[in-house]
Each structure stands twice: as C-alpha cells, then as structure tokens.
Image 1 (tube, rainbow, N blue to C red):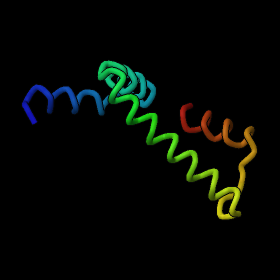
Image 2 (image 1 turned 45 degrees about the horizontal axis):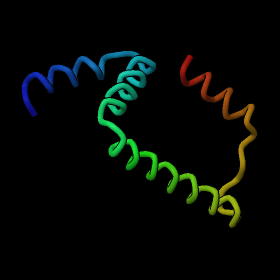
Image 3 (image 1 turned 90 degrees about the horizontal axis):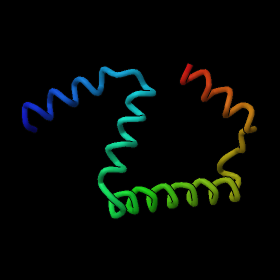
Image 4 (image 1 turned 90 degrees about the vertical axis):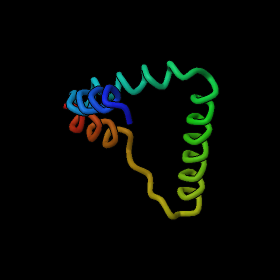
Length: 76
C-alpha cells in the first residue's frame, strides 16, 4: 500500500459511520458498472440464500418496525 493510500485509509476510518458509508458508496460508484454488477450479484445471491433459509424454517422473520428501530438505534 502506498503512503498516500495508507493516509487516506486512516483518515477515512476516522470518519463517523454515516460519512464512511457515503464515502464507500461514492468510491464504489466511481468503479463503474462492472464492479457494481459483481457487488449487486453478490447481494442478490445473499438475499436468495436468506430467503431459502426462511422458507425452510432455518431463519425467523423479524417485524419491519423492529428492524427499523434497531437501524435507527445503530445510526443514532
């Protein structure tokens, strides 16, 4: 890793969570469609795996209000 990249990484990791998420999204977007296609494909595969676990009874559902309340607590 170059010294510049090391410095940027250290500074980026020091940002608040929301700013790191924004930066990560901007960086991924800058890679173009091919990289995002791989990432999107990985998320689709993960969603399908989780849905299959749910259908098979190996994963329980969580009410949306609980999910959103947890997300607000984590981000707040």
